[in-house]
Image (tube, rainbow, N blue to C red):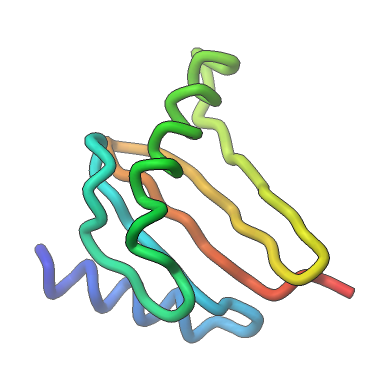
Length: 90
């Protein structure tokens, strides 16, 4: 599984505008990260998605965090949380 996970993350991080990608398990353990993704943020991202799920219990929410320089898209599904970092749209 780890080999396949790294291949998927490599594919994602090589998309135009993407600077980093992170995958964490349901306990906040970072399973893999590439590019600018900070492994230490895995637990916080999982917690964020747990709160989002309480707000939208009948859906699979996507959380978008935006700043002037970057965007982070976060989604949890199947026990895994995926965060994609990319340059902000100008």
